[in-house]
Image 1 (cartoon, rainbow, N blue to C red):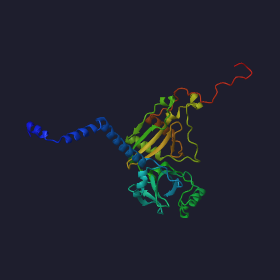
Image 2: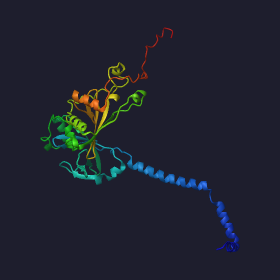
Image 3: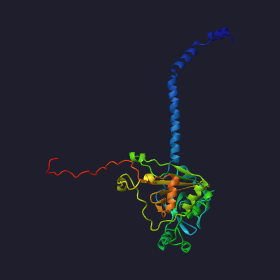
Image 4: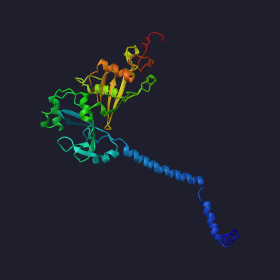
Length: 338
């Protein structure tokens, strides 16, 4: 259509149509309002999805009244497990991850597709499922301990003659029986990093390097130390934690624990990770829930300190402020002028 033809056509349009179009154009909201409305709708939808996702993946504690601890027999040892907090999504899908039964009953199961025993699934009496994580082997089994396990239906009378009493628990058994680690080649790396965080001025002044062992010779040497760890007798107290308030530090006799402690993580070929804590001052390794091992030899302690870069010398990181409520001088005599 040429320009002249277009103008002729417009001349024949009913005027009321033009008025209605003009009225519609005037009633249309401004551009910024339309953009704001669309943005608000988008944010509302995104917020709803975010809240839904946060609810799905928010860790939850096991249900009230459920067992917090689980014992199973692994060969001739009593393995202690504790219920793990899982997300809503994991709780809903746990039944699909149930693998082969573990033990003689139909209440404890392996995770489907795994060869390790680091996690087990418990079927509750109501038919629901709960995830448990390995904690440790019982450090020293006695007849009383076995009786207690039988009373709580963890063990049966038939287990009594199969469980060793008063046996040592080397960490090598944890690696073999729970994580299926049978040689140094099963370990990809060993990470040594800061074990604790102190956000005070003194804590921030302590520099702790993170060292990742990947060299085959270093991993082999570390594996030999881990495999040889033997559980401490009588469950002694863990190494004393030396803070800026501890007299040993204030008097220049011992370094801060934040300086000498390390979190140790073994990353395995099968995708699992195993964690320990190490105190370089005492040479003591600690497992979850205060399962302690006898100190390593002086040779191993020195090798770890040198290889990992642990500074065991006393360093002046500054003086801690006086704790509140402690007086630096006796109060004045009420009978004397202040």
